[in-house]
Amino acid sequence: MEIGQQDSDSVAATGASNQVSPVEFRLDAASGVPTYLQLVHQVEHALRLGYLKPGDQLPKVRDVVASLAINPNTVSKAYRELETEGLIVGRPGQGTFILATLSQVALPELTGLRRSLRGWLAKADTAGLDETGIVALVASELRDFYGRRSGSRTGGGAADGETEGAA
Image (cartoon, rainbow, N blue to C red; front, side, top):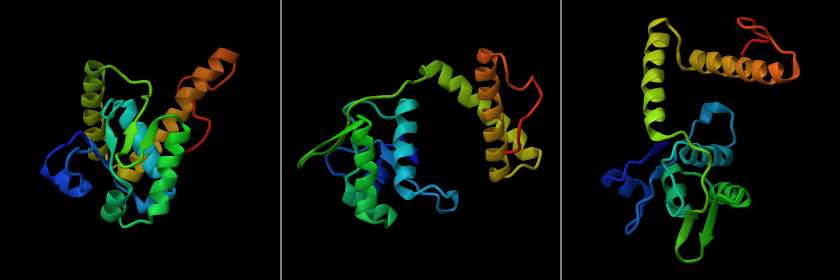
């Protein structure tokens, strides 16, 4: 997903003429995640990262359908899910708008974290990890990290340096 790019390419991709959506959806057919959930997750991630904020307009269903070549019911299902979560609201004749946001990291911290992550990704690439290997490593470490955090609250969990399972 590309977010925060409001140039002529985004206007063409979303088909919006008077208000450009700050989000352009992307799909990963190899992910195994249902299409509608990929759309939901992309909006949630954009909210967490501060790329979307209350009042921003999401692309119209017909524009998403045209740019991704997917069924309109898929986009509608994603938007219904986001509406059920209280994150968006549809306004008949106007479009779909962000209603609420999710917890965010402050911009200065986010910038530093992003810079550190880019450096780490470059090292992982140099070490020979491909995208799938990087995702597996990060997923495994996330599980271990949060497992230790919740385990330390209850007195259990893996000790530092131990893993409880493969990615």
